Length: 396
Image 1: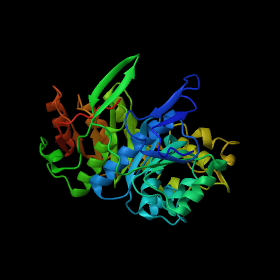
Image 2 (image 1 turned 120 degrees about the horizontal axis):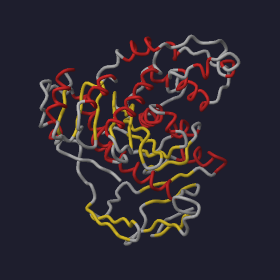
Image 3 (image 1 turned 135 degrees about the horizontal axis):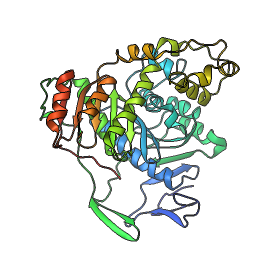
């Protein structure tokens, strides 16, 4: 399917099969995308175009290749292409794969929350190379958008999912109109696009906490958090460490629920690095989805669901020891240097209390709550450095 020289593309249906007709189109000019393979749907394009904006901004902010893993118009993960250490390679199961910087970015974006990334739509900031395509090829995914593809990468992706895998190319120079529109119940909403830049030192100009030290790595991670939140359904918070989101809490009405949800995801990411998890005795040829789900259950309080007699044999060659609550807490207490961004102000100090349990040392949030004093006091209690950005990032 090609969209070259066209300003409209018919889709099979909208959000749901009963929503017909459906299409994407331009009011003026041609579509800046070309479908190189497959037949992307309405939600695929929503994920693709939101994801592309995210990785484009991450690349502009950090100067590094970036990738994101989108599901239902929110990112499950986002990252830049920092090299993986041996532990990261092991928890992401890429020990024996050759990895380019772009591949590293997607391995990180996909790996932080593998359960949520199952069946994702991928966005890449750079031309997709063979190493990235080979990693994508082995994962369950709906499609990918990128500014281009090498011949080798495109050949690999065109064979995926029996030839139906969705591959979209977008013009890297495309700039949308400054005013955007959206119809709800037959009524058209109009607003200026959210073009705010989240990559400058002004993000750290207002630091109300006693600790005012933001190392360069923390500033980078907070920019990643805020850019990720710009394209995440609100309310939302994002925990980031070492150039990748490790926990995203999206679409919750209560901010503390966002903070808990994302914090729990960050905890799972770190618990997967516990020696007991790294050394689980897997049966040969276990499916990746089964392995990911089994790890999640093993490190939860429901561990007996995979360790009961007659059950563990499906997953392990020998019965693993339980990872106890005390062992988990002791391990999580070693997690440090995590950065936390929020798409709006934290209304109470309970968000900081929960963030502290997941190793948060740096925070960037809008500020402006009537209880800012309580939030600052709680940060000071734990020596957390917090910046008030004055920027709200609601996304709907």
